[in-house]
Structures are given as structure tokens and as C-alpha cells.
Length: 275
Image (cartoon, rainbow, N blue to C red):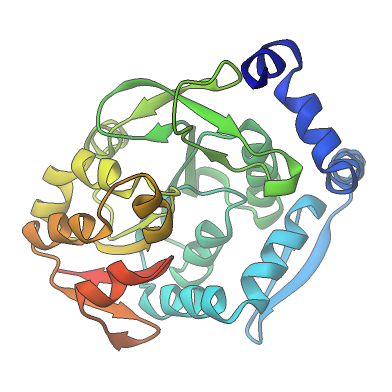
């Protein structure tokens, strides 16, 4: 019955019915943005951004949740003049915007996200920031191989993020997939910073960037989704073991050193990883 429902009723309709308030608000934000509307939001005492109205709720959440604010602050503290960020799971572009501000006029970013809806907001945010050619973005997932993969749209209730289904689903969407090594090679850049937020697919991303990570050792900002990994029978410690095999043996959470076992035991660990 569930499979029949997924085949007969478009996922977008089901998500709208599941989250009518958020879906209506999202539609209104889109109309407002097309009419030239934008919002001003103070993310930190030293940072005010102008953004697409649809990004305000997510950005405010990032600002006001202590763990997320600590993650952003750790990223800002690690930014450097002229940095190059690869932003995997860029979503609405908060970390890309941070890199452009604290990396100075010569900072660049390559942003990757599979969600058309999220990238529409991302593109608007980059225009409002005057990013221009400093930002290159791709609609894709990063995974172990080049090709395609199937993902589930989350709808307005999940700020239009996409996730990997636990099993084949008739309502999944096919999106392009690239490797991190392939992306860097095609873009012709050597990143100084890599941010990874991929809702449980961390190991696939790391496998896909082995040559880059071993050779150039950029700082890696990793969201390790231990809860998702354990629920699907995978071991989050294996992700950190892979990083260690690449030379990343210095881990920090919340500004302090953290042991791999501690990070792996958390539902979500936001880790700064250095070789």
C-alpha cells in the first residue's frame, strides 16, 4: 500500500500535505524573492548578511542553536586570506558566504548540492553578496563514483535538503554524482578547506577524495552523523579511521581536542579535522 501511494501521489504533493504551513511559507518566500524582496540578518556581532527570505529560518537556526553556532564560529576562526573552500552539501550557502567574507577578496568557493530548490536560494544569496565568479556551484551529490544516484527530496519541512533512501524508492529523484577528486580536477583548484555535510554519506565522500586529501591535506569540517550511520548498520568510527589513514589525526569539537571514539559515539559530531 505504501509503495502504491508513493507511485500514485507525487512526493511533492505528499510533502505539502505533511507540512502545509512550511510549504505555504516557502511559496510566499519565493514570490517575495522574485519581486526583489530580501532579508537582512545578523549572524554574528561582526557579520550581517542580506539573503533570500527562504533562508532566514535556516540561517537563524544555525545562529541560535549552540552546537551549530559553535560549528560556524570554528569555521570562521579557521578561515584564511585567499582560501579556497569546497562546500559539499552547500544548501543555502551559509558557509560559502562565510568563506567569502573571512577569506578576503581573493577567496573562492566551489559549492555542491543536489537540491534544485536549495540551489535557487543559494544562487540568490550569492547574487545578493556580489559573489560573481568567485563561486562555482554544481547541482550534484558527491559520492564514491562518477555517474548518478537516487535521493529523496525533503520538501519545505526539511528546508529542501535531500537524503539517501534506505532502500529503492519509486519517488526518489535521480541526480548527478561526482567524486571529490574529480570535482577538484575539473575545477582546477586545490582547496584549503573542505566542508562535508551529507547526512550519513560521509565515508563515500572521503573515499571519493582520497588523492586530494592525502596530497594536499585541506582542513576538513566534517558533520559525522553517527545516529544515522548506526541506524543503518554502519560504524561511524570507520569514517574517522579512514580519515586517520589519510593523515588526519587531529580532531576538535567545540574548540577542544576530541578522541575518535568520543566523536563516533555522538548522534551528530561537528568536527574540525586536521592532518
